[in-house]
View (cartoon, rainbow, N blue to C red):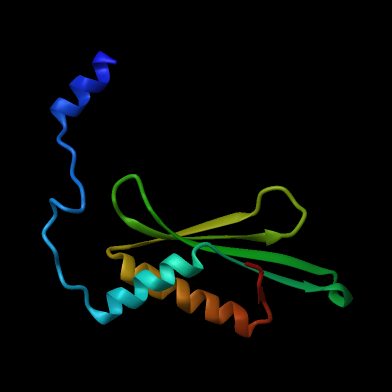
Length: 115
């Protein structure tokens, strides 16, 4: 109990009310809305005639060092693991834009949205 009190005394809490209000651009608002609705995006491509069962998951995440990462996980459905690719971006808007490009490319190649 004492440790919690010391911690709160050393590091002041910040909340939304203490931060100055900044106006967001329309692009940032769209990016935030896309991020809220679509992340993570899970895509699948199943074609029994070709014995194809693939998945593709794309997510925007904040890394341990406060970078924004667009993480892609893909592989064969039913197998353990898969492959992971991580792309680092300076802003969340750029990472969400990359997510949109990746999803559009996969949808044109025959993947379908699962969630």
